[in-house]
Image 1 (cartoon, rainbow over the protein chains, first blue to last red):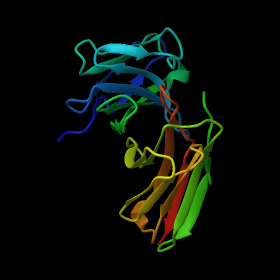
Image 2 (cartoon, chains in turn orange, yellow):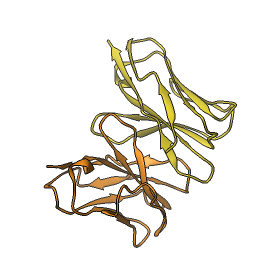
Image 3 (cartoon, rainbow over the protein chains, first blue to last red):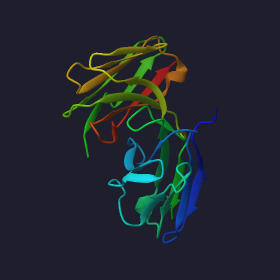
Length: 113
Length: 110
């Protein structure tokens, strides 16, 4: 019974680089969520998928952020031309259906230098 | 975004004491979830509440969904050192996403 996994756990990027963060949800979980968590804050919603459909991307902070889930399982969050303000922990969560209990991965800590 | 007011912001208690924290909102929520997060890890789900007035326990943890659907509390009885961490509430508006509180940092002094 594997939980949600994320990779890499840590990523250091130079300003201007592109990064890709991966999330493997719990098998059979239809809904997948991405959150951004700044130091000392609670997670903030970025986007969510129901299967392969991205139903809400209202939390993405800019058009440099892009998420996909092409086959309805693994998801990738891509950040283009990273900026220092993108430094945060990026959390992925999955749930068996939308607005049900969400289970989180360990997160990817992104540091932009 | 929605404001979830979580209090207290931090707590320092002696081992064995009971703990109470709460979360309030100006909006009516469908669901309340309580999570615990350890440093360097993702939040771990503790308790989920789905009905107004619902009282649910998970071991030493008890949480309630407020009657007005705008608040929830979490109690921890007989605290132990491994209860240390940050506790988050989260709630969802009808047909919308989950919003998280700012967290309560709990320190248990042995």
